[in-house]
Length: 171
Ligand SMILES: Cc1cc2nc3c(=O)[nH]c(=O)nc-3n(C[C@H](O)[C@H](O)[C@H](O)COP(=O)(O)O)c2cc1C
Image 1: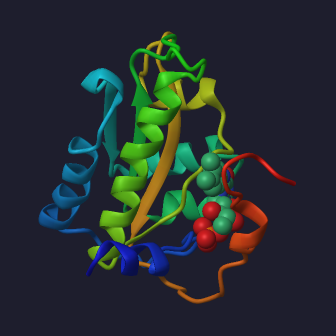
Image 2: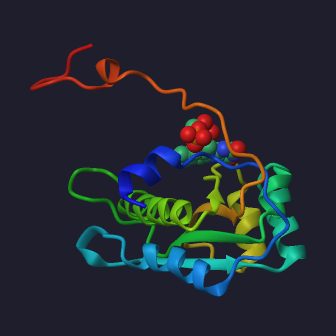
């Protein structure tokens, strides 16, 4: 599968089959995060792989009760270990670094026939407690990973005309 196809096929999956993921598939997804670029190549991140059913249920509760999160056989929590650093451009480094690494995993998952759903609705405090993450770190997402139960639906997106301008910003 090429990148363009993975981008086209990717969609947020909110229903998962009760079927385990092989270590080979999981490792290829994790390897995609490892290879991601980061500012100054600092790689200030940890990825916590959660398989334990009870812990997955707790994470789903912490994610505003979105039960599908706990139904996925694996949840990958993406954690920034140096969340204070701001780039020269004024943008927090960790948010960019982690977003890239997570999207690498999301697209690699598509190639493996797996689905994901980026989760932003979760309690930072509660997830840190469940996963024993230090207060000074920042959890960026808890990403469910599993075989999709429902696929389909069309992408609702703005047109290129609405989002692209040339040379300077125009409304
Ligand atoms: C930063 C971010 C946070 C999100 N948080 C949630 C979430 O908590 N729950 C959820 O069901 N979907 C969440 N989504 C998924 C979006 O709703 C979804 O990407 C968007 O509607 C487009 O649909 P698609 O991913 O199927 O193309 C999130 C997506 C992003 C990028």
